[in-house]
Image (tube, rainbow over all chains, first blue to last red):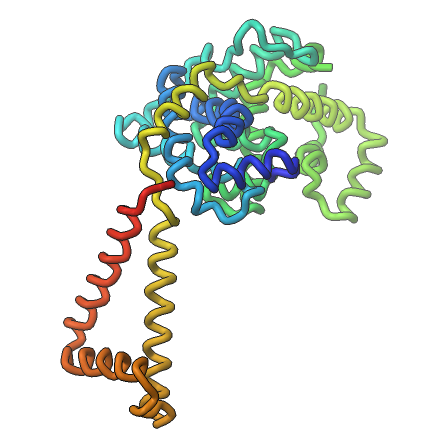
Length: 188
Length: 156
């Protein structure tokens, strides 16, 4: 949910057709959309193309957005639908697996709280999760979204988000078994 | 480290899913159980690590420029179809039904002026249709006209 009045103003202006305001929304939410798509399609170039499609489609349908403060979950839902369509089209949804290097961030990313080893351990474990668990964990840990938003994006009721997230976290722990103490030393 | 049967509650505790009584009981248990305290520390570390690890990547550098260039050539409907079209059509239908009821109850007089003449004309046309498929067809054509008009309207 958007609480910042400037951002809300940009959504309102964009709904009215202001392209510059829409550009600012791309700056604010482009990373969110791109990251979600990347975790779904596991390919950076495809994720870039789909992020572009997402924002173009959003522009054409922005006037249907009733609650301006819901823009983040609305744009993520649009991105998710576009990614699912893409995966359905290329018929590899079942087979798609995340290469372990896909999550490795750019070298200029700053992660003061995590060492490189800690990041690598967690990211490799997340890579081993199912597509749905990856989406869920990706969305659930974004500060911009609450569990209700995550439920709307994934098309599941809010209470189920907690249940599925709980299960996904358990599966993640399974993938981290044997490395737990190492992780504990790496993270704060 | 050995195990504790209550360590399965750690994640629920951390995700604030235990009810008040269970939470208090579990906190008491935590005080005396080093296994669950260790588990809690691990889960908390994992939670913090995930929050850090799942931070969004930066948007691709060219995304804004590409999108803004592309939307220059994209036609945006003047109003959100089909919502507005459906609303307009539903409103017209309700209005028409109300007129029909008023007409049937004799509240509308044929001597009420030009508007009543127009309404009478519409009633007569509908009565002449005298067929449900024909009326449905007329409704679909009306919706079609509204949608075509909506799509043809320039954005700005």
